[in-house]
Length: 202
Image (tube, rainbow, N blue to C red; front, side, top):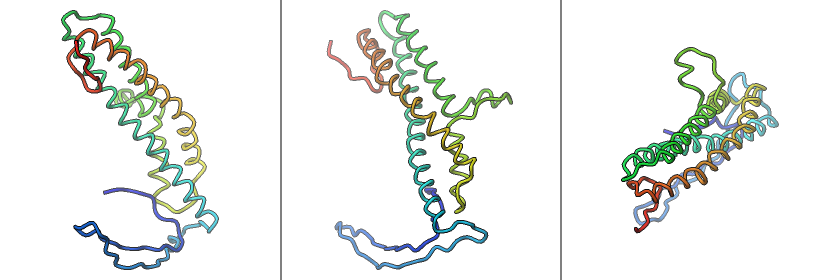
């Protein structure tokens, strides 16, 4: 079910092995194959290395960006659960509730920068392209061909490479700073347990 880029033209060695129930490996042999250029493909040996290097760089960036999308979703769920738990304390804290709402606003700002503004898109209003969309354009367009990356693909990649690290740093600061502080306050207030918190004995 996975999806990856086309291999660049060249000679490859392929081997097949099967792990037996006892843990040993049974090898079925090795074969050398040659991947020929696709019809109409213009890449040479030099650009084949260029294509491979650009794909590897794109794949590494995609792993971190998509992992951050998941982390952002998990963090938002933690704050929402915390917000609900704070409403169930014996003595509700308005300041803690305000902190939770402020945290959700910060996380939503990051979500829009990362994935785009879905609300604006539904209303057909112009909105900046999210970093995920930019990277998806590169992956969807370049991984399906063996030609050298276009100037547009390189530009999209460079935008994500430049703008993503500060965004990740802001998310890390929220998790390590704001969220931990709010979880500690929730524990002091006796709020019901929420994911990510370590309960303390009274």
